[in-house]
Length: 150
Image 1: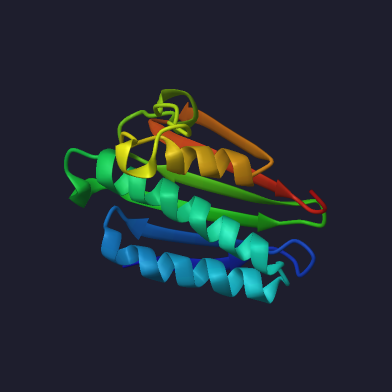
Image 2: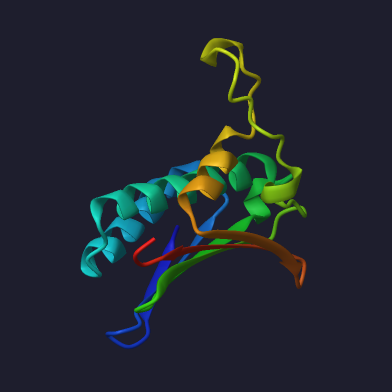
């Protein structure tokens, strides 16, 4: 079951959503992201890009991050400021840097001939202004930044 809390001042709102490493919790997470975006006046393309990036990364975490998903926890933190939206995705899964360890996408072959893997992370890196990874306190931290006006 997801846990949700809103924090921060009106000019700098923050959303924190915690969930188990279960795909059936993804719809609730996406609904909270959409609600936060609508409440802060995100342009339609931002809402699409943020939801796609979050979905891609969370699905990868759920599918590949845990030997036993019942122990898995994922936390999503959205920070909205006058300068940018910062998205932090934190999980307690096995160490994995999606930005350096995911295979590069095959953008040349026909769609039905491409190997699986790498395309979603490529989309995330393309749609966001910054995409970073770090491992801290035995947790994966993925940080995405989307600046206003970019």
